[in-house]
Length: 577
Picture 1 (tube, helix red, strand yellow):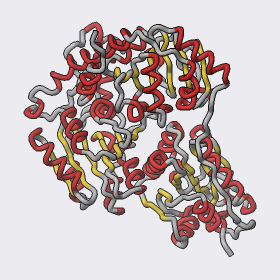
Picture 2 (cartoon, rainbow, N blue to C red; picture 1 turned 180 degrees about the vertical axis):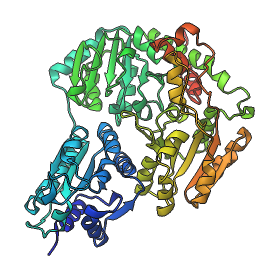
Picture 3 (spheres, rainbow, N blue to C red; picture 1 turned 90 degrees about the horizontal axis):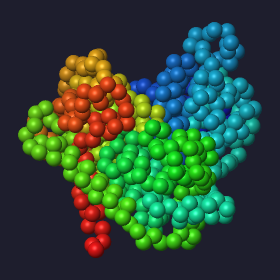
């Protein structure tokens, strides 16, 4: 007679789930044993449940399909929370199994007792307790469908004794609908959008993650209205490549003429972005297009709100637009963008191959050169976000994953695990800060256990660089940001992982090439300059006293990698009189 645990795994297999990330233990044991006995699904052992959630999230983001993680009762499933917050805020379809204490002990203050159905509510669309076998498989299928359909987290709480019991109902079969909907605005909304764009003299497009799959349409729209195109960090991988209208990125990591174009336009069109930094937005003359109606107008006042899929909305409005003849605003912003990049690039490229400590910008630039055309980059929060934003070149095939909404440390390595498990033949590169790597250092051993060929590039500056930067622009002396130098290459070698430590810039390219070519897991520990970007050439004493918009843009204005080449190329698109 199959148990509830057997039924649980059977339903997951029917839903296309191929693995569960987690750590075995007590209340989870019936489920883990069911995995052992079932073809087509595996248990991926990690060292910390937080890493299990991050790994599942990365798998879901790379594949677009449901991924699963699990934690045992009490502390085990509590460790999932941070990674689940990140998954939920990244719209990753993830099911979390939160195992629970024996059902008869719930409410008695039993060993390891928590109330997961309350604790996980804020980071999930669905969180329910399965208290009797008769609730299976219906409750599990509801959890799966909610995660897959609403693109977020579902949590199913399952006491260990219930998992042990015999199944009460037949499993039968079921399907999961996970195809994202296509939402086309009403004809009246399309007409208003067309009127708004036709009547504007200076249009600027600002693109986020919602432009995924709409690159061609965004370029056609920009060409029709002669609009400079900027992007948020999450929009970079979908919109920056093959973009003759590119003016860079806005936000705390921003560069180029994006902010200026946004402020000078008389119509700013937000496309698929829930950009959180409202002080970077003009707060006027703004139109927003988003498939999620809750995003509309919550960051800025709007002249027009349009609910719809970005690609389908643009397709609907294009036939109603008049081709603009005046491209003076676009050309001026392209020139300004190129000028700004030219001004900052020299100080971060001149004699960089001789600079000690190594410039982290140089490391990221070399990595971009050597990485595969379809590589998956996972990026730690902090300064690694800067290096990825400035130096990793999108091309429609690469992916860049990070904790871009939740902003958690230590995300890069566990996300790399999830991305690599999905496809062991694809190059997966973790851009890890020494602070982030230290936090979940045990996941190095997960690479070793599963022989995952993740390439781990450690930007080792013995400092929490972004925190130091935040203190600087807030007018505070940095305190508590520096720590002892750690030889991560030695730790990796002791764990049986191929590793090399680099402290001279002339060693970077060969060491990087060797690590990327190594057939198994590899770590390159690069000793980088802890002061990179923290003392820019233009900052003034007055600016240091507050974290104003101009300050953040000046502090983070250095180093742009190949984007200066793109800007130069785009200047050639300006028609000659």
